[in-house]
Length: 305
Ligand SMILES: Nc1nc2c(ncn2[C@@H]2O[C@H](COP(=O)(O)OP(=O)(O)OP(=O)(O)O)[C@@H](O)[C@H]2O)c(=O)[nH]1
Image 1 (tube, protein in one colour):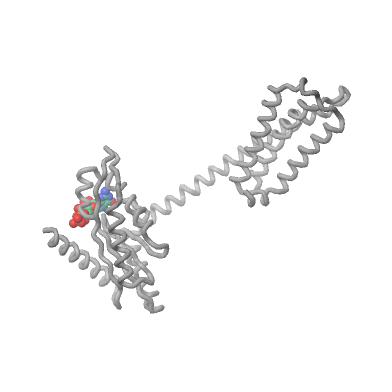
Image 2: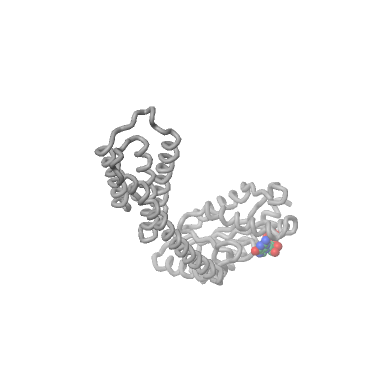
């Protein structure tokens, strides 16, 4: 609110000065009417409309950047407000018959306001078309960027490999550890089978948000393939990575996702593996991660058998 006022302060002060000048002119030239002569319906209608216009002006200035279109809309609304305010003042102050300028103050700014508003809305419309076009282009760029996955807004396997290479280089340069987590959903094919592929897609999107919420800002989550995700953890040793992996596994287990068909909870679980990079290339590291996850799964199955 404060920043809005400072950005548009000259315009707001101008409107305040204009409204006060009109009021002062009425006070100097006329006399306050007795309460018995006040027309409450007019006061409520005209005064209420003037107040609503002030609210519109506030919302306009709060939601738009300063500039040509905002100025057109502001001056349009300002003129309409001024007309209605003068109309309201007229209800409280009686002017002598000889005075005719009050009619100009009440009716003059109204058509000007409508013309300015029409111009403002016309330019606003064109501005919105340009913004829509830009958004479409951005979305196209995003969708067409082949390193990004179509279902979740995550980098895919190629992106992961490129980022992992960068992380390994940086870790070697700075002599800092870097770790990885691999997370694979258990029995995801069953969910697709029982609830349909679209539900599976929705679930992958929800899982993505869940995993991101449980990671730190500098961690990078990618979707390696299907229901398998990999997280790059810069400046992180193996113990800390294992703690984070456990947290991700617990978060998935506790997620109470409801199917869109009947709203029943779909029980979920994931297998995780965390390890710290040694002096090795990306492929060897990812291979070690795959093998580690497979072994962890096997030993879990043996325990449960
Ligand atoms: N809905 C949906 N399913 C996918 C997508 N990509 C892969 N899948 C499915 O995910 C499953 C992954 O295969 P697996 O990892 O072998 O299946 P799983 O049932 O999780 O088996 P385990 O990992 O051994 O527990 C397959 O059924 C794929 O069809 C996708 O983008 N959307």
